[in-house]
Image (cartoon, rainbow, N blue to C red):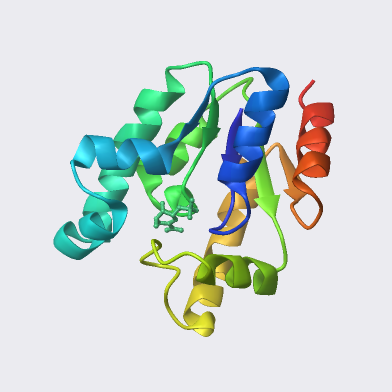
Length: 162
Ligand code: S3P
């Protein structure tokens, strides 16, 4: 199972909850990328730029898709054609788009300083969100709201899994 959606939608939190409930391993691509690159995500953006980050992210995605685990992706994975095509080509693996109103996402994003693309003014981040929406919906088998408790969101996903 693969979780996609904008920064702050709760991919990591929900993936961990699902992992616990389903007794399955969880891999967060944002944790795999620094291991491949040998530096943190903000360092990759600062030293090598977004294009290099997307290539690391693609490698992390490809590697992780080999495994039967719950995958929490990064919010921008859909913007890189190679990663998008990889996700589009999956068959028989559910892709859930976690979503909430932009204002809620933005508030959650501001609580964490480790997102180079999230730490910009709200109109810039909103543009980013709007530009990605079609991609999330076209890849997802289902959209699930995270404007409810973690337990309810996870339970909803489990119902949709079969
Ligand atoms: C990004 C989202 C982040 C992380 C990186 C870029 C984006 O992941 O991959 O900062 O472009 O939206 P989260 O969605 O887990 O915050």
